[in-house]
Image (cartoon, rainbow, N blue to C red; front, side, top):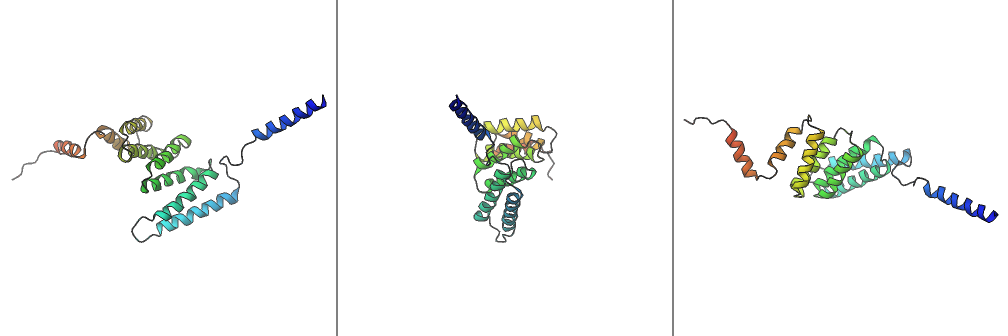
Length: 187
């Protein structure tokens, strides 16, 4: 009988240990980790801004991405996380890594729906699908979602324009625009 209770106690102990939150679940390990990653971000952003050559420095961009990703992985619930996700998406777009940009924008919408740039993230995700990934059906769905969620947002007119013209060539759009312009008499 004592073996049974010992075995049961060991099983319960193992169960308790297994059910403990993983220390690597995305919560900050401590103020030092947050401070360290914040300093890495500041340094990487300063390097990006300090580039005076007029060209996009891919290595500096990758350094900034690594710093953003480290911060995000350590500080999932921190208010700055959404901003760093947005910045990383923009860098991914600059690096033509559109799938990663879309994933970051989508994460903003899913995890930070109250973030002040959530509407822009949704718009840019749809824009990437339309213009960078050539997935117009997915873009249409996202544009419509934008109009449903943010009908009064300042980007709503641009989103409606994109939706209305998604299947038209640039030449068709220009012709339609010119046809709507008032005709003036040429003397």
